[in-house]
Length: 132
Image (cartoon, rainbow, N blue to C red; front, side):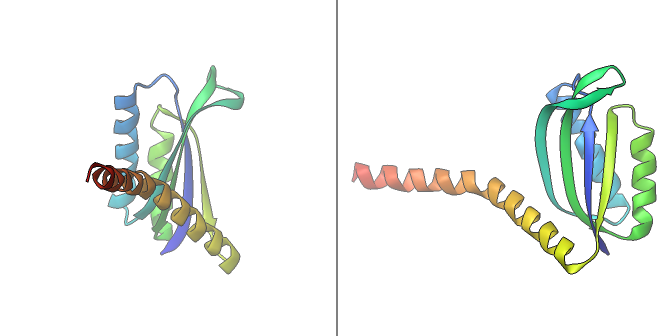
């Protein structure tokens, strides 16, 4: 199992529901091919450096996962034939320095997801203390 980062740029014309459907489709593809997704980062819609297929903007999403090497070819093939994905890039992390960066990114993303829940529970505790 190797460590990978997959960046996909999705058409900006998709609705939120369509975007979530495409992302769940991509997660399904990854998991069917033996990948274990460690983190997902939705970066939002941004201006592209240059126009691609008449689009000046794109929605960026990054997946951090571990997978067998053979799975990457199949995942990339399926991304290429799906029209909603404008561009993609797969990065393999090999040496210790790169793996350290991969682990830091995964930790950072998972902490961002956990922070709102912790903040909400802290607010609830503070409200109960002030009421008493």
